[in-house]
Image (cartoon, rainbow, N blue to C red; front, side, top):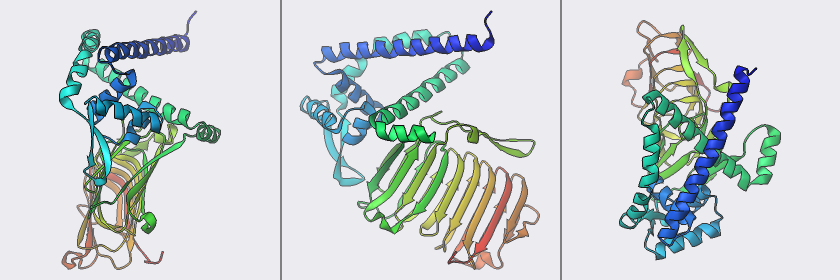
Length: 387
């Protein structure tokens, strides 16, 4: 007699077989297309990545195709000679070169996949919208997991160490300052645990990042660092039940994102999709603004002396916000949407969730902190500048 667990195991096994067959089938179709155009299968895969992901450096292409640096360079050379790609200066750093597809040449290759795409559309036609969303989520998570597996497989020694520690091997990225005069850090999607610091030793680097777990894409243009995680690359759950914030991410993958910023530039920081937790030590950063949307779990900000009016906004609510600022720094605090406690230097906010340090509205250099969507606990505290 079968049990629910055994039936589920059988279904999962069947899905694994089907995804393997799907992968093999697409690989075979890619080989057919490649032969038609006189290319290698990896050449066609490369062109597909450039079309979907946009122009990128040779090193990034190597990461996504799992080719060595030498093999990736030779592939790009072949495609450039055949007129399918071209090397152009990176807009973020004219000293670097990126690879972009030549649209008029790659269009015919893209159209060659129309029959395969049509077969997929036909297979999905009976499915309901919610079923399609679930399938999409499964496939995106599978793609993210496969990229993690590739990264680990290419670094077996690191993978062994990570496995022994019960984690995953770290990955990283960086970019030079180039001609940028100000920095902007943008997380387009929801992110796991984030730490942000600064380091004067970065020198000519605009930023450095270290990722553990799911590896996002990181792009830089004119000082704007854009980080995007694949959907469902990591599990996150932040919500309120009967006024309590729940965070189930602790029971899932220990994904982390560690960012180090160049402290010679002013920075604006933006998180558009929320985060499980944010721990930002910005004492060495000339902060222009901090904006987090989409809801966050725990947020800890350690701030330096402001220059002008620096706005800190949390939209979508937060489980806990703790702000540490230098003694004597004026603050205006507003909390909307309900809260359990909101204090400024130990003094509770008055009606409407507002409280200011004395005379803050008349002082040019100050922090204005706005929390919308509710929060369990908000505290803003002054600390000694040497602390």
